[in-house]
Picture 1 (cartoon, rainbow, N blue to C red):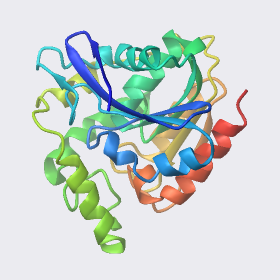
Picture 2: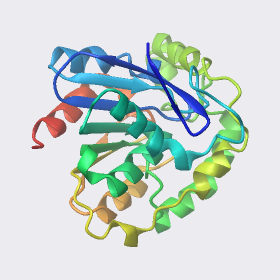
Picture 3: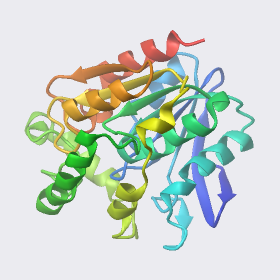
Amino acid sequence: MPTVENAGATIYYEVRGSGPAVVFAHGAGGNAASWWQQVPFFLDRGYRVVAFDHRGFARSACSDEAMDLGRFPADLLAILDAEGIDRAALVCQSMGGWTGLPTALRHPDRVRCLVLCGTPGGLRTPKVEQGFRQVAERVRQTGLTGPRGAALADNFPDLDPGRAFLYEQISSFNQGIPPSLMGKIQSARTGPDELQGYRVPTLVIAGSKDVLFAPETLREVADAIPGAEFVEFDGAGHSTYFEQAGRFNATVAEFIGKQP
């Protein structure tokens, strides 16, 4: 599979199919393999599907010094440029929102629409500020991707132990991620005032059992984004795309399909 070079990193990505482009940006517990339930679904519906490893994750190499979330949008644009993709729908999970929302803000001509899953995308509202004070402690207590980690609903390993195990295995592909990553995520900020004139169609998806970014937090995020839609998945945790893939795929496909 191809790679692109950008700002001290080699970014690994996968591209399949033809048609309108949809790009999947993973969270801190994942990588391109996380989207195994989405890629075949969207391929079957005539999309050109792109998934990639963020810099420093899995097969995308960079030094600790180059591990900068501020470079995520440029990494994405480097992939789009390499593939000749002028415009794409962006589907962003958790940390991936720090790729998607800044790209939509700075390069709206390149973004057909934006889906933010379990993420404020760097937008700082009062509830997001409050939530961040709890995130680090929760991850410290349970871990992020382990058997009872914060990335899945607390009962998901009991409901589907096989997929819970797979989630942990996919996450194990990531090696050498700097411990400072959480601090870098918290320090990357977008203020509500920066959204004036925002015009990219946006959908915010929340899980009712998300212990990292609660539904009320993400509803506040959606309210702050001009024109954004909001949907809550009952019974899902932080990783709606993984836990309730069928509903997630149908919801995202419907949203993307109605955009010009």
